[in-house]
Length: 270
Image 1 (cartoon, one colour):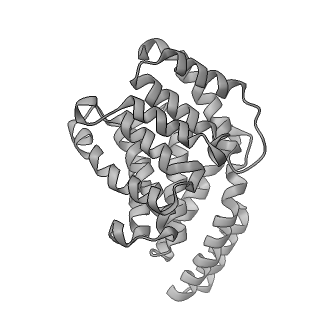
Image 2 (tube, one colour):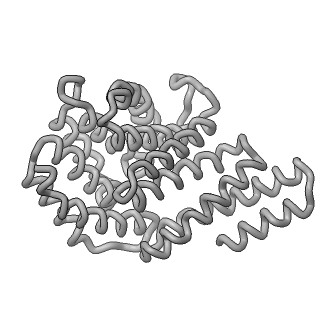
């Protein structure tokens, strides 16, 4: 896929001209969009980790030629956030934070400055990744007062996602709601019990086999409530899960690796 995309970008460069570059970028953006399922269906985590930066860099090159392309901007947001979550945040929180910020910026551009009340169902992917990136950034920086102060700003966006398309990205609205109540200190409206309820809701229907939700459930809600039994059960379920082919395969493979690391860090949590 990468070679086809680079070829398309190269043709645009050779042909020259702003409008031709923009047209080529839009054609290539379609290839990127169609090819994302291939990337996220990978079972080889190291292969995907090595391949993703090239794809992300290509997206940025294409965005430079077509800066208002909502599909490209949203895919870039998802790509940077997913790459950071799966591969970077456990190793380098500062670098991961910068990727989450970059993803948030791309999603914000995709939203085009629209007010929440004006957004439609078609805007949910951009709004979801904007909110996901922001929540992930705040989670990594919750030791900073400025991050704690910004947490309430997540709630209106999460509620709007729930209103428009709650099941987008494996029941994403409920994943975000669970994270929201787990992230906030109790004195500022945090509620580990509510967090658990929303994570449980996220694990129904199409979200039942998405292991990254179980990982976040253990890391955030079970840890926040000091529920050691739940923590152990969720991580064991991730470790023992039989993985199927599909667009969630890479995230599930990464969740298994992250779950083992989280289990090793248990003594630092409880």
